[in-house]
View 1 (cartoon, rainbow, N blue to C red):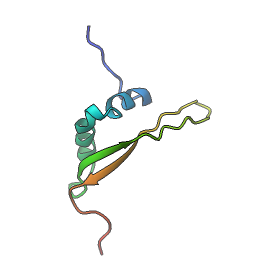
View 2 (view 1 turned 180 degrees about the vertical axis):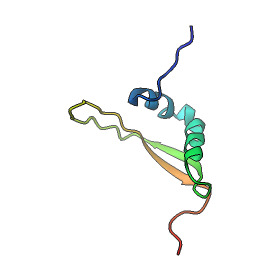
View 3 (view 1 turned 90 degrees about the vertical axis):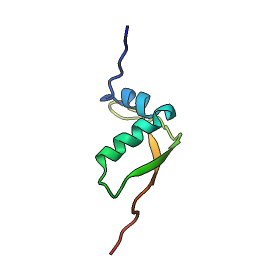
Length: 76
């Protein structure tokens, strides 16, 4: 029996992209969405999950620090 994770849910997205073993998959996803001059070379996961108190009781956070291979900052 095969099992699939729905990445369109908060829990599914974090299960796939929040796992450091899938770091290369997240880097590929980010690079597909970013313009060519803003490519991600590496990411660092930070554990900053803080439970929130809201109407929908959501508490999932995924914080990343990305290192790029192209131009960074603003140019004039």
